[in-house]
Image (cartoon, rainbow, N blue to C red; front, side):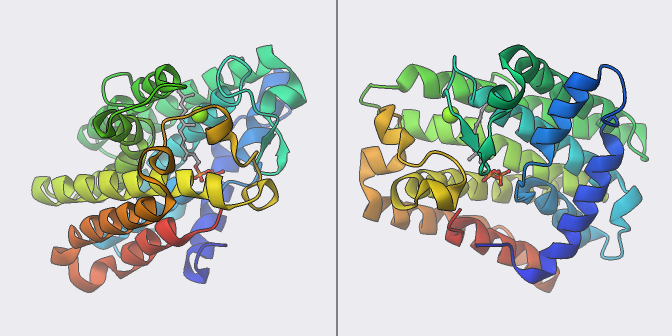
Length: 297
Ligand code: FPP
Ligand code: MG
């Protein structure tokens, strides 16, 4: 399933900005820039950057995405997301050969370059936020949102560790919640909150949108778990059925598929309720939230 048509323009603008902000393939060392560009342009849906831009539009409807602070945050987060996929696929982690229908970064370029391409993307993300065309205050706030979301304390790396250490074990629902909120929802929350901050939202609105982002991000990972069970490798562009094979802590494993669908729907409803006070201004963000739990890939 593709994103609804009206997000196509966002996606094209994001792709163009990603291309500008990444070092050219001809920049030395060529090998790593080739690998970084390969994974960034392997066909991701660009959900996180689009969430960032659409959140900014609530406060700044005429935003020129090309040159905006929101676009810098959006691209930085896509770089972090891409690094996390490259490292997640490594033999020491999930050991996967296929991502977005293509050979994974280490399959294409070798493990050493894949590790370094991930490191390069993570570092570039913070450089790009630091170089945002905005005030020092907004830049600092964006750095705080993104670094905490990517880190070890209730952030992506912490969630990944808990995910790894839960393999093959019977996990409690609280542990499962911790994994999903940290591993996936935190970065999605930062996509939304940096969009709001970049467009000058007030403290109360940023807090509401953080809640929206975290809850829809949680629903997104529950849906990802469901798709791993329900869809084929061809549809997903990655190896389907791996969660069961690796005895991963997932919602279907703990609650079953039917109840997992109910949980995802309930989380999406709770997330969307956070947008009530924005009325029509949040209609595109609502549509995006619906897409995130109804997607098939
Ligand atoms: C798919 O996103 C990705 C997830 C559901 C997140 C899973 C979390 C990790 C792999 C964390 C790994 C962390 C470390 C530190 C290695 P998507 O459907 O948006 O993918 P797309 O960009 O291909 O569309
Ligand atoms: Mg994984």
